[in-house]
Length: 306
Ligand code: CP
Ligand code: NVA
Image 1 (cartoon, helix red, strand yellow):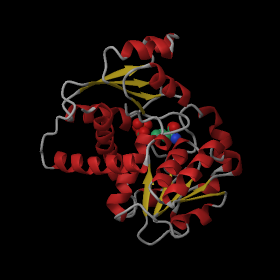
Image 2 (tube, rainbow, N blue to C red):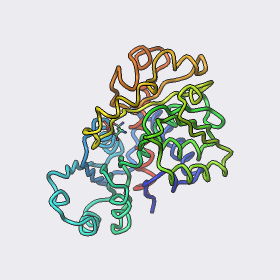
Image 3 (cartoon, helix red, strand yellow):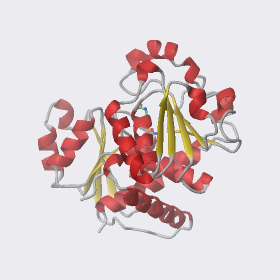
Image 4 (tube, rainbow, N blue to C red):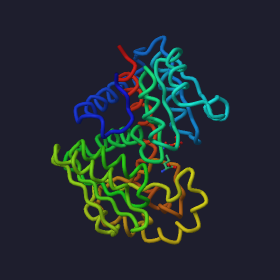
């Protein structure tokens, strides 16, 4: 059974297959060619955090594949009142063909996969955001022509996006340079695993505190909010530390002249990125957001298709 819990679990071939299928499904969608590959299937979507892109792209994607999607807010299901992951996984496995879950703990997503008998897709945890990175890789491929050897600079918080970008870049032979403040570094286990993944593909992972070093000659510049969901109380403290990590025109100018700017969104203009960058000619953030739809359709077909 194919889960998507972390890109670390996927082989380079799995990722390539997902991207190729996403390109095919995108083309078919644009040309009006029906592709009901999940006819009669139902995806449950559990959310314990907010979402615009993930919720809408999974729901619309399932519809376009001929299936149905059920929005399950944790406020409304018994999980939010203390029913265990074990019982939830067992019960939902009797009704659904797959589950997409957005929650806090990565271990909850892994437990759902362990105890249930249907494919589980990670729609974001505090640790990882693999679906976003598949869409990002698709976007980079479209705009830069290929992934291997391309330099991606991530500047900002050592968060779920930084982690999944490291895995995704490592698995596809990219050069990933991550610049974070000393107090907000990436998870050590993730860095270690990404470096191991990189050895297999010839990818490079660079960890630094210097945003200029990361962005220098990059093909792709990426940032994300400094304050992730669930960290609202840390905002004041974080804003003080992250000033030098803002992606503004000056920092962006160190990248290659044709470099693209990516952001998973939602963005906070004037904080992690300035208007002139995110709304500038090199920004492809809305192509990136659209690609959530196409990439996730590929993931769902790989997970739930025949
Ligand atoms: N990028 C992303 O996951 O967006 P949402 O939080 O709106 O789903
Ligand atoms: N790092 C952000 C990503 C949002 C898509 C968060 O976890 O809130």
